[in-house]
View (cartoon, each protein chain N blue to C red):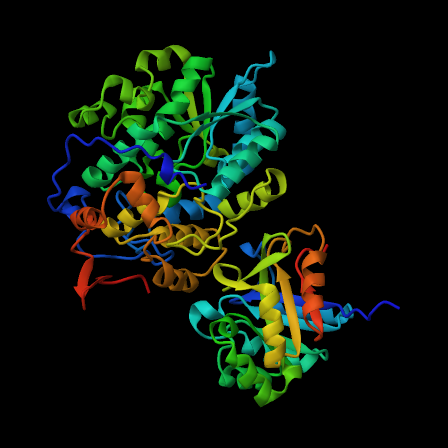
Length: 401
Length: 207
């Protein structure tokens, strides 16, 4: 459903300065681009590590996942965890942060119907729902699950999105706040100490390997893993009030200790294979692939479907790191043995740098910005080490081959 | 009397493997083309369709060696689809042992290609492949690139036009039913049937 006509004019009191950012320095990226020999990711992904054989740590982790990890044992650990938190009095005993997409659908549905838990799915709303995203979200509820949908104030959210886009080069930042903090807030409010997230992104997609063997985090790890980024309160410099920002704030740390919160990764307990999630969700939670075909910037029809803004999250990633959505999708599919590396590389060359045209106007209206302003911000975040301008057109100097 | 029914096996091929998805998405590897084709042949299938699902990605059809091998031991009509774009592509497929070629994306981009192909090889050789996505009651849109791209083309108008351009057969795949094993989209097949007289192959939802 198109919501343009409901958008109120945003009152922007202060703007970030749009001076050029030195991306390699800002994100500590190597200047020489190197591609993993096994998948298609490059060393420009922040925190990823390549070994002496030129293999990325996500591939090394995947290798271990598919050969060394004893998944029967891990499932036994999952059953133990469930037994430790299961309630018999009808109250919810686990929170599943869920967009309604295929991955969280599997987590929530299996926790209830395979492991006998009583999950509360908690959805932090996308910025701007797509029709298929709303359909799949409703489908999950109608497959037999309780849900709380949290939607922050549209005016504040749009303003924060605009500012985060310009200042951090990350229009998703307001969404990220809620994704991390809101399940914790609900945990405290409802007295539910167990939260089950989906995948450990650092392990699955490449990043900080220290957490690969951790089932999850507790209040002890809160500062390091949950609240390490830019603080919610820092946005006050743009005129936001405490009331504006309250919804984005995590609960205070004492309440997390008091509750004894534990936030685990499903991907620690069960082998994370997105394609298999598609099959399970199609069968059990009414999940549908995108009826409009593939998403822009990638070849897939089933991943990250629910937010009209998300193409811009990926596009900024492409500008900064030369890695787009196809790279992430293809790299995971190569590691899972669904496609060969040469197919992945061909897919990257075909789709990775595609501009998200379909929701471009939506994004401009949502943020209340002009095309000129949009491109000014993009130039601020473009990594000159990776891009060159040829015949009036920006192109990546190299792509995986 | 019911019209005669021919049972046709369709193998979607990617690289060395036969793949299968739901709604043409989430392609799982299900076997090897040589072995599966032999199994279907021995089980008495009437025809086999080979679809190269990544031909358009690579800009070339990679399954001709598969067809060459199959042609030595499989003696039912074989159709090859995926990445068929030029008269030379058709020559290549026929030389490898195919009896027919199926065309989707190239025909939508340039409908006259169907006429040129039918003139050159005869209508019996040219199959129009349609990936139909339901858009409303009695309305379907033709998709391309293995169901990943929209074309804006109305399926019912398109099959009529393609018949007039000389295709000898139409393969209609229901993207909505494909891979679900919940039955065929009979409404789609009937609607297409009412528009054209050439043989129709219904695909998607069997099982």
